[in-house]
Each structure stands twice: as structure tokens, then as C-alpha cells.
Image 1: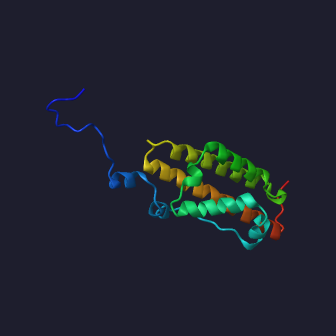
Image 2 (image 1 turned 120 degrees about the vertical axis):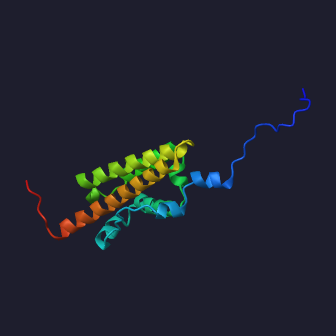
Image 3 (image 1 turned 90 degrees about the vertical axis):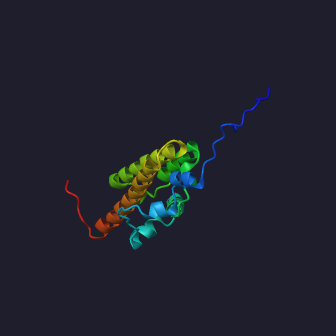
Length: 160
């Protein structure tokens, strides 16, 4: 069938670059996030040197800081496998209640970010908040690892 005298173009709506940019998280957006960022101390670095999944996490966080969200946007089953291996490969000396609690928080924030990035109608502001929460959880994990070695070095005894 043809439409006679119909000058209307079919309802194809093209997104402008501005609209795409308004939804896309960039490096500039992530750099604008303010949060406490803790690195690892020398003792902590030695302790995690052989922990491959921790090294992989740090590489993915560096990519995230550059605006590359692919790892965290990927298939949830792959991310869950990574998180399981992350926990299972943790060195025994790091398996304290405090560090395991920070690991659980990190896992939760990672899964939350993954779910928000995979849904197309989630606002950029909410996605950025989830990115910030993930970065804070990783920073807190680093801080807790540092504290463990600081307490060990100072022979701080815990009350019984």
C-alpha cells in the first residue's frame, strides 16, 4: 500500500550526539567524583603480590577511572565468577573478619553497578552514584588491608 499525498516521514527518531553524551559516563564524570581514595602500603603490596584477581581488579579500576565501564557492564555470570574467584584466591593471611566484610561490601557494590549499567533507562546520575560507591568500597578494602599490616607491625593486641 502507498499513502497518497502523505508528506510525513515515518517516525524514525534519531538521537543526537548531545543526547548520547548526556547518558554516557565519561572519564571527566568519574574524575569529578569526590571520595577518599586509599592506596596500598608497601607491606600490603607484598601481601597481595601473588593475588592475581586483586591485580586484575586494580587494572579494571584503572580502566573504570578512564571511563571504560565494559568490565562492570558485562555479563553478570562472568562478573559473579570473577567475584567468587576473587574471594577464593585471597591469601590466607588476609582472611580476617574485617577484610572479608570489606570484600563482601565490594562484591555487593560491583553487582549493583553491573545491574544499573545493564539497564538502559537508568539515569546517568544514579549510575555515577553506583560507580562512586564501588570506588569507595575498593578504597575501603585497601584501607582495611593496610590497617591489618599496620596493627601487625605495631603488635597491637585485640582485647579478649
